[in-house]
Image 1: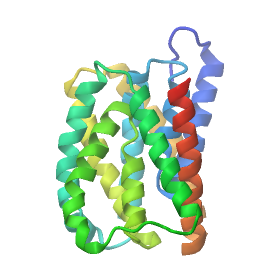
Image 2 (image 1 turned 90 degrees about the vertical axis):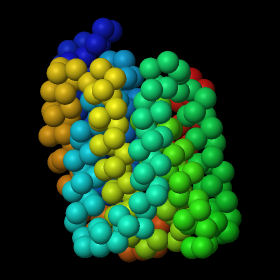
Image 3 (image 1 turned 120 degrees about the vertical axis):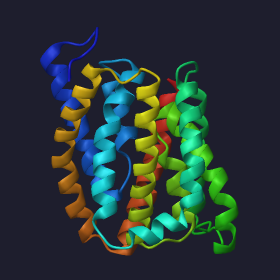
Image 4 (image 1 turned 90 degrees about the horizontal axis):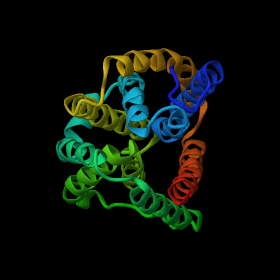
Length: 253
């Protein structure tokens, strides 16, 4: 990955590759976290908009692999069709906003929301969304996640909280999360390309990032396959807490 001004060649490339590998490992293990961990590191060596563009393709490839690993994809697609449709609209709006606004306020609100959710779960209350509410909530959740994702490159946080609150088991949680990310990231790829943000050079860097990510992702999947439901739930909540703290700190810097 060619660094921008202020970064020196080989060290910047090495740090970027290590960040992509580590973020891909986390994604393989808990099904999320790749753009949140890797975007800030790449943003040390290039502008944020370029970092977002570079990381779309590896995220898309890993999500497609994760979504296709087990049967039941059709049922998941039908279940979340409304969420996906509104998420596509939100992603285009968020990408448009990315060209003109800073993401600090969005990150701060998002991080605070995650921490509140994690704190409630730590008390043992574990908020749940009744199945009867799912169809009514899906359009709003999908649209908001799309807008936030377009602006910050982190659409997954709201989706993760929503899916967790639906009480899904590990397999359905991973499948729902991965398929949602495929839809959102494919939309984001179209949106950033249409906006002129995906240049040939950035596209080449994105292909390189994909190749680097797959090794870490494969190791993460092996860890995920060995986790039982209880351990997986704890890992998801634990990482959400870390994620919330990270977003708040990033927004306040």
